[in-house]
Image (cartoon, one colour):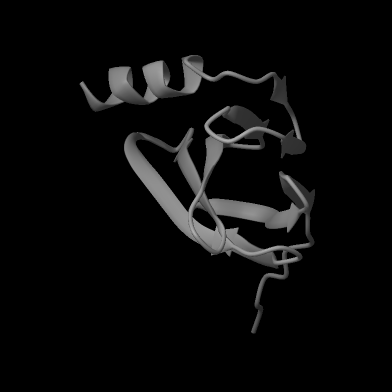
Length: 114
């Protein structure tokens, strides 16, 4: 059931699938990002002071585990971070004017050794 829901959620995306980055120009018009072992669906809505950005994602390693991020982005805000279960990628969410962009950049992975 959860796998079916996740697949349906990612299939019902209003935008084009683009590997690496997406730009959302309209409220409630989502788009999807597919990179590495991650499939993510993102949309935003406007509230009083900011845009509420919602990103729902699954990884190929745990497709039944649906993860969700919510954040408020005011004009000019930018947030960059990694995600649990997604190695070697840094995600940046940014708002500029009436658009929200999401980028997935490759980053080096250092492995500790003795």
